[in-house]
Length: 352
Image 1: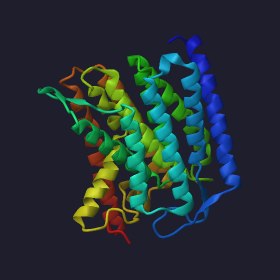
Image 2 (image 1 turned 120 degrees about the horizontal axis):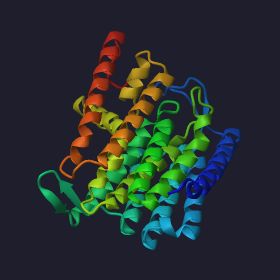
Image 3 (image 1 turned 180 degrees about the vertical axis):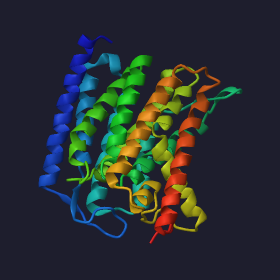
Image 4 (image 1 turned 45 degrees about the horizontal axis):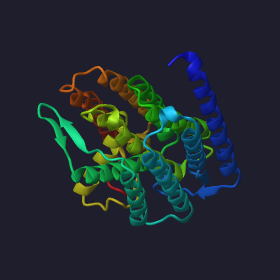
Protein backbone atom coordinates (compact mmCIF):
# COMPACT_ATOMS: atom_id res chain seq x y z
CA UNK A 1 0.00 0.00 0.00
CA UNK A 2 1.41 3.41 -0.96
CA UNK A 3 1.71 6.32 1.45
CA UNK A 4 -0.91 8.23 -0.55
CA UNK A 5 -3.38 5.38 -0.11
CA UNK A 6 -2.49 5.00 3.59
CA UNK A 7 -3.05 8.65 4.59
CA UNK A 8 -6.89 8.51 4.44
CA UNK A 9 -6.75 5.50 6.76
CA UNK A 10 -4.70 7.50 9.26
CA UNK A 11 -7.15 10.40 8.97
CA UNK A 12 -10.08 8.09 9.67
CA UNK A 13 -8.22 6.60 12.64
CA UNK A 14 -7.53 10.10 13.99
CA UNK A 15 -11.25 10.94 13.86
CA UNK A 16 -12.08 7.73 15.74
CA UNK A 17 -9.40 8.50 18.34
CA UNK A 18 -10.96 11.94 18.81
CA UNK A 19 -14.41 10.39 19.23
CA UNK A 20 -13.00 7.98 21.81
CA UNK A 21 -11.28 10.81 23.71
CA UNK A 22 -14.47 12.90 23.79
CA UNK A 23 -16.47 9.99 25.20
CA UNK A 24 -13.75 9.28 27.78
CA UNK A 25 -13.91 12.91 28.92
CA UNK A 26 -17.70 12.53 29.19
CA UNK A 27 -17.23 9.47 31.40
CA UNK A 28 -14.87 11.49 33.60
CA UNK A 29 -17.40 14.31 33.87
CA UNK A 30 -20.26 11.92 34.72
CA UNK A 31 -18.35 9.14 36.46
CA UNK A 32 -19.05 5.60 37.49
CA UNK A 33 -16.73 5.57 40.49
CA UNK A 34 -14.38 2.71 41.32
CA UNK A 35 -13.86 2.83 45.08
CA UNK A 36 -10.54 1.56 46.51
CA UNK A 37 -10.29 -1.53 48.68
CA UNK A 38 -7.61 -3.99 49.82
CA UNK A 39 -7.44 -5.75 46.44
CA UNK A 40 -7.05 -2.65 44.28
CA UNK A 41 -3.97 -0.61 43.46
CA UNK A 42 -5.56 2.86 43.62
CA UNK A 43 -6.05 4.77 46.86
CA UNK A 44 -8.83 7.22 45.96
CA UNK A 45 -12.20 6.90 44.17
CA UNK A 46 -11.50 6.99 40.44
CA UNK A 47 -13.92 7.01 37.49
CA UNK A 48 -14.17 3.81 35.45
CA UNK A 49 -15.92 2.91 32.23
CA UNK A 50 -13.47 4.74 29.99
CA UNK A 51 -13.68 1.75 27.68
CA UNK A 52 -16.98 3.23 26.44
CA UNK A 53 -14.85 5.42 24.18
CA UNK A 54 -13.02 2.38 22.79
CA UNK A 55 -16.24 0.42 22.20
CA UNK A 56 -18.09 3.28 20.52
CA UNK A 57 -15.14 4.20 18.32
CA UNK A 58 -14.87 0.57 17.22
CA UNK A 59 -18.58 0.16 16.48
CA UNK A 60 -18.71 3.44 14.51
CA UNK A 61 -15.56 2.46 12.64
CA UNK A 62 -16.91 -0.98 11.78
CA UNK A 63 -20.22 0.43 10.55
CA UNK A 64 -18.37 2.86 8.28
CA UNK A 65 -16.11 0.02 7.14
CA UNK A 66 -19.14 -2.11 6.34
CA UNK A 67 -20.68 0.67 4.26
CA UNK A 68 -17.71 1.99 2.28
CA UNK A 69 -14.67 -0.32 2.45
CA UNK A 70 -15.41 -3.30 0.24
CA UNK A 71 -11.73 -4.31 0.26
CA UNK A 72 -11.82 -4.99 4.02
CA UNK A 73 -15.12 -6.85 4.29
CA UNK A 74 -15.41 -10.47 5.30
CA UNK A 75 -18.41 -12.55 4.29
CA UNK A 76 -21.47 -10.53 5.29
CA UNK A 77 -22.67 -12.98 7.97
CA UNK A 78 -19.27 -12.93 9.69
CA UNK A 79 -18.98 -9.17 9.47
CA UNK A 80 -22.42 -8.58 10.98
CA UNK A 81 -21.75 -11.30 13.57
CA UNK A 82 -18.59 -9.52 14.72
CA UNK A 83 -20.41 -6.19 15.06
CA UNK A 84 -23.37 -7.70 16.94
CA UNK A 85 -21.13 -9.70 19.28
CA UNK A 86 -19.00 -6.61 19.95
CA UNK A 87 -22.05 -4.53 20.82
CA UNK A 88 -23.42 -7.29 23.07
CA UNK A 89 -20.21 -7.77 25.05
CA UNK A 90 -19.81 -3.99 25.37
CA UNK A 91 -23.33 -3.44 26.75
CA UNK A 92 -23.14 -6.32 29.25
CA UNK A 93 -19.67 -5.25 30.43
CA UNK A 94 -20.84 -1.65 30.93
CA UNK A 95 -23.75 -2.92 33.03
CA UNK A 96 -21.20 -5.00 34.95
CA UNK A 97 -19.24 -1.81 35.71
CA UNK A 98 -22.43 -0.27 37.05
CA UNK A 99 -23.91 -3.28 38.87
CA UNK A 100 -20.90 -5.56 39.57
CA UNK A 101 -22.32 -8.87 38.33
CA UNK A 102 -21.31 -12.23 39.71
CA UNK A 103 -18.56 -13.99 37.75
CA UNK A 104 -20.94 -16.68 36.46
CA UNK A 105 -23.14 -13.96 34.89
CA UNK A 106 -20.11 -12.43 33.15
CA UNK A 107 -19.07 -15.86 31.91
CA UNK A 108 -22.52 -16.58 30.50
CA UNK A 109 -22.58 -13.24 28.67
CA UNK A 110 -19.13 -13.88 27.22
CA UNK A 111 -20.18 -17.34 26.06
CA UNK A 112 -23.31 -15.98 24.36
CA UNK A 113 -21.30 -13.29 22.55
CA UNK A 114 -18.76 -15.92 21.51
CA UNK A 115 -21.53 -18.15 20.18
CA UNK A 116 -22.83 -15.26 18.06
CA UNK A 117 -19.39 -14.94 16.46
CA UNK A 118 -19.10 -18.72 16.01
CA UNK A 119 -22.59 -18.98 14.50
CA UNK A 120 -21.58 -16.34 11.95
CA UNK A 121 -18.80 -18.65 10.75
CA UNK A 122 -15.76 -17.50 12.73
CA UNK A 123 -14.38 -20.91 13.69
CA UNK A 124 -10.93 -22.50 13.75
CA UNK A 125 -11.75 -25.69 11.84
CA UNK A 126 -8.25 -27.21 11.51
CA UNK A 127 -4.85 -27.02 13.15
CA UNK A 128 -1.40 -27.61 11.70
CA UNK A 129 0.77 -29.61 14.08
CA UNK A 130 4.57 -29.70 13.73
CA UNK A 131 5.81 -32.79 11.88
CA UNK A 132 2.26 -34.16 11.72
CA UNK A 133 0.48 -31.88 9.31
CA UNK A 134 -2.98 -30.38 9.07
CA UNK A 135 -5.54 -31.95 11.40
CA UNK A 136 -9.26 -31.27 10.72
CA UNK A 137 -11.10 -30.46 13.95
CA UNK A 138 -14.73 -30.99 12.95
CA UNK A 139 -17.12 -30.14 15.79
CA UNK A 140 -14.17 -29.82 18.18
CA UNK A 141 -13.23 -26.68 16.25
CA UNK A 142 -16.28 -24.84 17.58
CA UNK A 143 -15.50 -25.97 21.14
CA UNK A 144 -11.88 -24.87 20.78
CA UNK A 145 -12.97 -21.49 19.38
CA UNK A 146 -15.45 -21.00 22.24
CA UNK A 147 -12.77 -21.82 24.82
CA UNK A 148 -10.25 -19.48 23.16
CA UNK A 149 -12.64 -16.52 23.02
CA UNK A 150 -13.71 -16.88 26.66
CA UNK A 151 -10.14 -17.48 27.87
CA UNK A 152 -8.74 -14.50 25.96
CA UNK A 153 -11.58 -12.23 27.10
CA UNK A 154 -10.92 -13.04 30.74
CA UNK A 155 -7.13 -12.94 30.43
CA UNK A 156 -7.21 -9.33 29.24
CA UNK A 157 -9.88 -8.47 31.82
CA UNK A 158 -7.85 -9.97 34.69
CA UNK A 159 -4.72 -8.08 33.61
CA UNK A 160 -6.41 -4.68 33.74
CA UNK A 161 -5.42 -3.81 37.29
CA UNK A 162 -2.62 -1.28 36.81
CA UNK A 163 -2.63 2.10 35.09
CA UNK A 164 -2.04 1.87 31.32
CA UNK A 165 -0.69 -1.70 31.40
CA UNK A 166 -3.41 -3.23 29.23
CA UNK A 167 -4.11 -0.07 27.23
CA UNK A 168 -0.48 0.52 26.29
CA UNK A 169 0.19 -3.16 25.60
CA UNK A 170 -2.82 -3.54 23.33
CA UNK A 171 -2.07 -0.33 21.45
CA UNK A 172 1.33 -1.81 20.52
CA UNK A 173 -0.26 -5.18 19.74
CA UNK A 174 -2.92 -3.61 17.48
CA UNK A 175 -0.20 -1.75 15.59
CA UNK A 176 1.79 -4.97 15.18
CA UNK A 177 -1.21 -7.07 14.13
CA UNK A 178 -2.23 -4.40 11.64
CA UNK A 179 1.27 -4.42 10.14
CA UNK A 180 1.28 -8.22 9.87
CA UNK A 181 -2.18 -8.22 8.26
CA UNK A 182 -1.10 -5.50 5.83
CA UNK A 183 1.84 -7.63 4.71
CA UNK A 184 -0.34 -10.73 4.36
CA UNK A 185 -3.29 -9.06 2.64
CA UNK A 186 -5.63 -9.66 5.58
CA UNK A 187 -7.59 -6.48 4.99
CA UNK A 188 -10.34 -7.02 7.56
CA UNK A 189 -7.80 -7.74 10.30
CA UNK A 190 -5.77 -4.70 9.20
CA UNK A 191 -8.83 -2.42 9.30
CA UNK A 192 -10.13 -3.82 12.60
CA UNK A 193 -6.69 -3.45 14.22
CA UNK A 194 -6.46 0.15 13.00
CA UNK A 195 -9.93 0.94 14.38
CA UNK A 196 -9.27 -0.78 17.73
CA UNK A 197 -5.93 0.98 18.04
CA UNK A 198 -7.56 4.33 17.34
CA UNK A 199 -10.08 3.78 20.14
CA UNK A 200 -7.30 2.85 22.57
CA UNK A 201 -5.24 5.88 21.49
CA UNK A 202 -8.10 8.20 22.42
CA UNK A 203 -8.41 6.58 25.84
CA UNK A 204 -4.78 5.98 26.83
CA UNK A 205 -3.71 9.57 27.73
CA UNK A 206 -6.36 9.60 30.47
CA UNK A 207 -5.22 6.23 31.82
CA UNK A 208 -1.51 6.97 32.22
CA UNK A 209 -0.32 6.86 35.83
CA UNK A 210 -1.79 8.48 37.84
CA UNK A 211 -4.93 7.53 35.93
CA UNK A 212 -7.80 9.96 35.60
CA UNK A 213 -10.06 7.07 34.57
CA UNK A 214 -9.94 3.28 34.24
CA UNK A 215 -11.22 1.42 31.18
CA UNK A 216 -13.38 -0.82 33.39
CA UNK A 217 -14.85 -4.15 32.30
CA UNK A 218 -16.51 -2.42 29.35
CA UNK A 219 -13.01 -1.79 28.00
CA UNK A 220 -11.05 -4.83 29.15
CA UNK A 221 -13.68 -7.48 28.37
CA UNK A 222 -14.42 -5.87 25.02
CA UNK A 223 -10.74 -5.69 24.05
CA UNK A 224 -10.09 -9.26 25.14
CA UNK A 225 -13.11 -10.45 23.17
CA UNK A 226 -12.12 -8.55 20.03
CA UNK A 227 -8.50 -9.73 20.17
CA UNK A 228 -9.80 -13.30 20.45
CA UNK A 229 -12.07 -12.81 17.44
CA UNK A 230 -9.21 -11.30 15.43
CA UNK A 231 -7.13 -14.33 16.40
CA UNK A 232 -9.74 -16.60 14.82
CA UNK A 233 -9.94 -14.36 11.74
CA UNK A 234 -6.13 -14.39 11.49
CA UNK A 235 -6.20 -18.19 11.25
CA UNK A 236 -7.52 -17.74 7.73
CA UNK A 237 -4.42 -15.87 6.56
CA UNK A 238 -2.91 -19.20 5.47
CA UNK A 239 -4.34 -22.50 4.28
CA UNK A 240 -2.97 -24.51 7.21
CA UNK A 241 -4.36 -21.99 9.73
CA UNK A 242 -0.96 -21.73 11.40
CA UNK A 243 -1.65 -17.99 11.58
CA UNK A 244 -3.98 -18.72 14.49
CA UNK A 245 -0.77 -18.58 16.54
CA UNK A 246 -0.28 -14.88 15.73
CA UNK A 247 -2.64 -13.34 18.30
CA UNK A 248 -1.70 -15.74 21.14
CA UNK A 249 1.92 -14.88 20.38
CA UNK A 250 1.20 -11.13 20.52
CA UNK A 251 -0.74 -11.55 23.79
CA UNK A 252 1.73 -14.02 25.28
CA UNK A 253 2.67 -11.96 28.36
CA UNK A 254 -0.97 -11.37 29.33
CA UNK A 255 -1.90 -15.01 28.71
CA UNK A 256 1.13 -16.31 30.64
CA UNK A 257 0.45 -14.16 33.71
CA UNK A 258 -3.22 -15.19 33.76
CA UNK A 259 -2.51 -18.88 33.15
CA UNK A 260 0.23 -19.04 35.77
CA UNK A 261 -1.92 -17.24 38.33
CA UNK A 262 -4.93 -19.51 37.79
CA UNK A 263 -2.84 -22.67 38.04
CA UNK A 264 -0.99 -21.42 41.13
CA UNK A 265 -4.20 -20.42 42.90
CA UNK A 266 -5.85 -23.74 42.04
CA UNK A 267 -2.82 -25.60 43.42
CA UNK A 268 -3.08 -23.55 46.63
CA UNK A 269 -6.76 -24.45 46.99
CA UNK A 270 -8.05 -20.93 46.38
CA UNK A 271 -11.34 -20.14 44.62
CA UNK A 272 -10.36 -19.05 41.11
CA UNK A 273 -13.14 -16.47 40.71
CA UNK A 274 -12.48 -14.80 44.08
CA UNK A 275 -10.96 -11.27 43.94
CA UNK A 276 -7.24 -11.05 44.69
CA UNK A 277 -4.03 -9.09 44.06
CA UNK A 278 -1.61 -11.91 43.28
CA UNK A 279 -1.10 -11.70 39.53
CA UNK A 280 2.58 -11.43 38.64
CA UNK A 281 2.19 -7.79 37.63
CA UNK A 282 0.41 -7.03 40.90
CA UNK A 283 3.04 -8.80 42.99
CA UNK A 284 5.75 -6.90 41.09
CA UNK A 285 4.07 -3.60 41.97
CA UNK A 286 3.48 -4.63 45.58
CA UNK A 287 7.14 -5.65 45.90
CA UNK A 288 8.25 -2.08 45.20
CA UNK A 289 8.30 -1.59 41.42
CA UNK A 290 6.35 1.51 40.41
CA UNK A 291 3.13 1.13 38.44
CA UNK A 292 4.77 3.04 35.57
CA UNK A 293 7.73 0.66 35.48
CA UNK A 294 5.57 -2.47 35.54
CA UNK A 295 3.41 -1.08 32.72
CA UNK A 296 6.52 -0.13 30.73
CA UNK A 297 7.94 -3.65 31.15
CA UNK A 298 4.74 -5.08 29.70
CA UNK A 299 4.90 -2.61 26.82
CA UNK A 300 8.39 -3.96 26.19
CA UNK A 301 7.03 -7.51 26.18
CA UNK A 302 4.44 -6.48 23.58
CA UNK A 303 7.03 -4.83 21.35
CA UNK A 304 9.16 -8.00 21.56
CA UNK A 305 6.17 -10.12 20.57
CA UNK A 306 5.44 -7.86 17.59
CA UNK A 307 9.03 -8.41 16.38
CA UNK A 308 8.53 -12.18 16.77
CA UNK A 309 5.25 -12.00 14.85
CA UNK A 310 7.04 -10.36 11.94
CA UNK A 311 9.68 -13.11 12.11
CA UNK A 312 6.88 -15.70 12.24
CA UNK A 313 5.87 -14.76 8.68
CA UNK A 314 9.30 -15.78 7.38
CA UNK A 315 9.58 -19.15 9.14
CA UNK A 316 8.86 -22.49 7.51
CA UNK A 317 5.60 -24.21 8.58
CA UNK A 318 7.53 -26.76 10.67
CA UNK A 319 9.35 -23.99 12.55
CA UNK A 320 6.43 -21.62 13.13
CA UNK A 321 5.06 -23.30 16.30
CA UNK A 322 8.52 -22.98 17.88
CA UNK A 323 8.22 -19.18 17.81
CA UNK A 324 6.53 -19.36 21.25
CA UNK A 325 9.77 -20.55 22.89
CA UNK A 326 11.53 -17.12 23.12
CA UNK A 327 8.55 -15.37 24.81
CA UNK A 328 8.14 -18.36 27.12
CA UNK A 329 11.78 -18.03 28.18
CA UNK A 330 11.32 -14.29 28.79
CA UNK A 331 8.20 -14.87 30.90
CA UNK A 332 9.94 -17.53 32.98
CA UNK A 333 12.75 -15.05 33.66
CA UNK A 334 10.14 -12.42 34.61
CA UNK A 335 8.49 -14.96 36.94
CA UNK A 336 11.81 -15.75 38.61
CA UNK A 337 12.58 -12.03 39.03
CA UNK A 338 9.18 -11.24 40.54
CA UNK A 339 9.34 -14.30 42.83
CA UNK A 340 12.74 -13.15 44.14
CA UNK A 341 11.38 -9.64 44.84
CA UNK A 342 8.32 -11.10 46.56
CA UNK A 343 10.53 -13.25 48.77
CA UNK A 344 12.77 -10.30 49.71
CA UNK A 345 9.75 -8.14 50.48
CA UNK A 346 8.21 -10.84 52.68
CA UNK A 347 4.94 -10.89 50.72
CA UNK A 348 2.53 -13.81 50.58
CA UNK A 349 1.21 -15.30 47.35
CA UNK A 350 -2.08 -16.09 49.08
CA UNK A 351 -5.07 -13.83 48.44
CA UNK A 352 -5.99 -11.81 51.45
